[in-house]
Structures are given as C-alpha cells and as structure tokens.
Length: 427
Image (cartoon, rainbow, N blue to C red; front, side, top):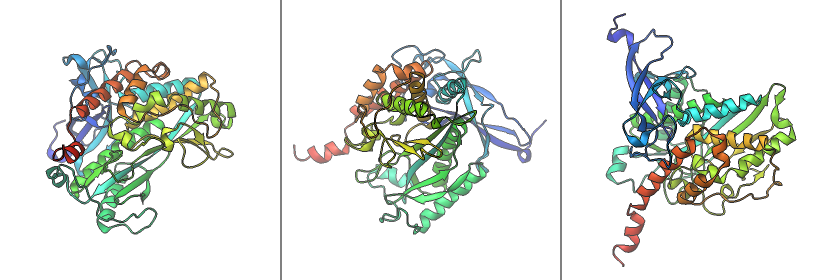
C-alpha cells in the first residue's frame, strides 16, 4: 500500500541499553499496521557504552556480543512481547530486543537478562510480580539554562519541603499532571503522584504486576517524564543524589512470588531462603542497583541501605510486608538511576539462588556483610563474586562491570569543582 502523510505515523523502535535508555530508530509506518515487527541492524557497541557513548571493553569475550571490536553488528527487532505505547505527537513506541545475525537473542542485553531470570522462575513453577516506586527531582530552570551554568545551581520552584502536603507549586502541578496524562495516553496504569521529602522531589505511582511489563513501563515512564519536562522548558533528573544537600532519589522495588496454589511466600522456608539469597548476594549485586559514582553519594556509610538486613520495619534494606496475610518483599537499596531490568533481575535471581540452595536466613535485624560505599568497591565485589554470575546469563556481569569501569575511569580523570574550590586559591 502506498502511504501518504495522512495515513502514516512514526514508530519508535527502542532497544533498552545498559543505562535503561532507549536506542533505536524512528520509522514511518502505516497507521493501520496492527502488529509492528520491524527490524534493523545496529552497531553492537550500543549496548555497552557510558553515558557519553564511550565504548566499554569487557574482561573477556561475551558470547553474541563483541562490542569491544567495534566492527560487529546486531539485529534490533521489535519485541513480540512488548506493548505498543501511544506517545501522542511523538508517534508510537515499541520496545525491542537484540539478536545476533543468526537470529539468536543476545543474552547480555538488559531486557534479555530479565527474561532469562523469569524463565528460571517459571521452571521452578513460580510466578513473580513486581512494583517499582521511583523518585525524581523537577527544577525550575530549563536544560539549556542549567548547562550554561554548568549545572551548579539547580533550583526547584519552591524552597519548602512539601512531603505529604497537597500544597504543590502551580508550575510543578502543571508539569506533573501533564506527565500523568501522557503516561495514561501511553497505556501506563497511573495511580497518581505525590510530593516527596525534599523541595522539588516527586514520585508518580503505578500498578503492581508482571515483571517484564512493569520494567518496560518503567523505562517508558522515564522517557515520558524527560520529554514532557522539555516541552515545559523544565529540567528533571533521576540522579541518585543531584546536590550536596538534597535527599537521594530511590527506586524501591516490591516483589511477590506466586505459584499455582497461591502466594509462595506463605511457605516460611521459601520466604526465608529467598530473603537469605537477596541479602547474601547484595554486595556482589551492587552495580545492578547502584551503577554510577553518584549512586553511592545516596548511600552513606552506616545508613540502613548499606547494612544488609531484613526487618518488618520501614527503614531496612529488605522489608517484609504483610507476612501474615499477603507477604511481599520491599528492597530499598536501588537508586532512581538504576536500570529497572538489571535491578529487578538481580533481585529475583538472588532470591531464587537462596531458594535453590536452601540458604539459612539471618535473624531479623542481623546484618549480613556490608554494601560497598564507592563505585570502585562495587566493581571489585561484582567482579570477584561467583554466585550472581551463576544465576545470570553469560556476559551480563561482564557488560555491567565493563561500563562501570569506564564510568570510574572518566571520574578519576576529572578535576571537580570541589577540588578547585578548596585548593585553587589556597594551596
């Protein structure tokens, strides 16, 4: 069929990269195309770059992904298990998976990492569900204004801490309601939004459900937030800790484990072994929850998140909720900057490791090891760990550590404003 401008739309085909950003193409397609399944080739390094698209080199070859040679291609194909999201004037969006030239999935790609762990759960007769709560900051300045000021002084519209109050600045309310409407148009199940514990910090809440669909929605949601903010000439950030005196922005993850006859966590042995696995693997999983130098500014030494323990209380690394009626777990260590596919995969895989190895659970409040306090420590722990590698697809750990190493090297070479302000005039 010959298309005209009146019966076409742009279809964005987006492959989630290691940062949870979407890389791909915008294709002109017919508006009556019911099941979009386009594919195209891309350079294979797109899955493993830092924020500035600097390529990462792994410690060892990764099957099906040879980004370090710089001369390989992958096939990006619209995923059959992705919904089609309506982005309004920006057209439609479908998420994609990465394949090699023989059509085989590239298992180190973040979306495939999660699907592999979900397949492991299914083989055990388990049906996991998840919900994510991700916070962000909205500033009054435009991105250009902040760039011109080298991001030194991001300011919210209001200097006051709103927390649970309904007294939201009109400028923030207009932005948040526009985001909620755009999410609703895209088919995301928005429950509402709330002020958080710092000026300009907010959280938009979504429903609880299927692991893959929730993580897909999480990535689409972040895309919508950034695009809507630009249309309002505002800046938003999902940085873990954007300023010295700000609260951190987290991504709390709620996980339940179903099975054919109900909630698997009603079996105390399953519940306790699952919690033991999450806590035991937490140090070597740290890069999956906290992937950047800045991530660890949100996690000061001595904070509850850096002392792996479980509790029924709110301020714990791993919280057990409603144990008598409908038990679920809340993991509070991941930051808003985490890739949802990788964080969710690490959470579920660690728990399944505990179940399969019948690990003994520590007592409530008993600290099991320590969480790293710097990116350098996290890289070392993730590289040296063996348990997480054993439950994730080949190449997943190598990809994540390679990208983190580039991030660390870039930071180590950078002269910071902290150094100039302290030393330039006085030393």
